Length: 62
Image 1 (cartoon, rainbow, N blue to C red):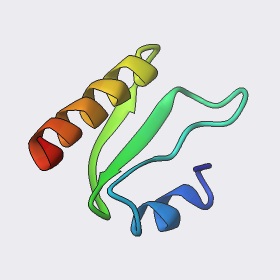
Image 2 (spheres, one colour):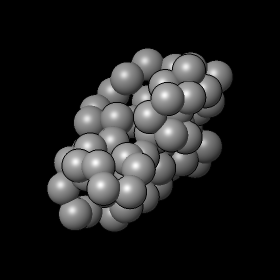
Image 3 (cartoon, one colour):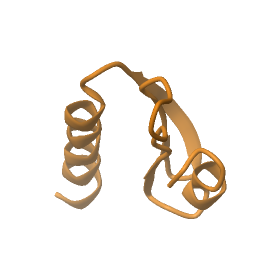
């Protein structure tokens, strides 16, 4: 979700991320099971988020 709606929407999701808009700093808070877990920063947000999702799936659905 966006920085405006993302945090609220993430409270109802297994995993949620709020991505920055165009021209904003690359900072993306990640929510796990409705709670803020970590804030990703920098140019590797996509790869780091993918690793979080893969770990979540492995630990919850394996």
